[in-house]
Image (cartoon, rainbow, N blue to C red):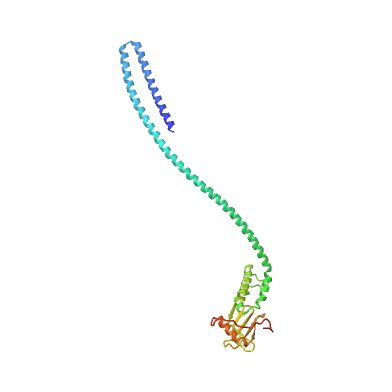
Length: 290
């Protein structure tokens, strides 16, 4: 741009110079023509003098105009050069910012592609897992009726404390095909009852029911259940006691006053009223054995 403006300025100077020379040549030719006609030396001198004065004034004015034009041109060139430097620096900064933004966009796009790939892989894994779980559910659902029937039969052998714990879930087990109960509820019933039975079977449970044992009549007993295997009971006096064994439809209770003091000691240990010690309680495995 600086080179273009310099060339324009030089062209303007040369144009003004040749224009001035042309005007002077025309004026001199006119004067010489007059002198040839008149032949007057005085007129020639006068014309030459006037031409010299006019040429000096024109040269001074022309020089002043050229200097002013040169100053304006140089000023314009400097302003344009400074403005171009500022604009060039701004364009460079913009290019750098745009380049960084483009890099960020490319990295973000790459992350999105990777995330999409990972998401598709995870979705495929979940779909495969869902299919596997559905296959398991289908197999369990086919066996549910058999499991429920077996569980209902076992519930008849449960002791009273355990039956109270699972009462809600026992009532929700369907008794016929017409019962419209969801798979989830049916599976929950079985899982909870089996869990409670397993927990009861691993503990010594103390219960205080009112029982009618043989011909003694009803009274409140302390009953110790040793899991689902056997139980021992004793009354408040510590003189009446016996053994309980599992039976369908409810446990059977048999008087055995010999175990009463031992059961009373066991109850006190269970309640942490005395220090624990070994006790020799009988264990009945059938109707006629100890």
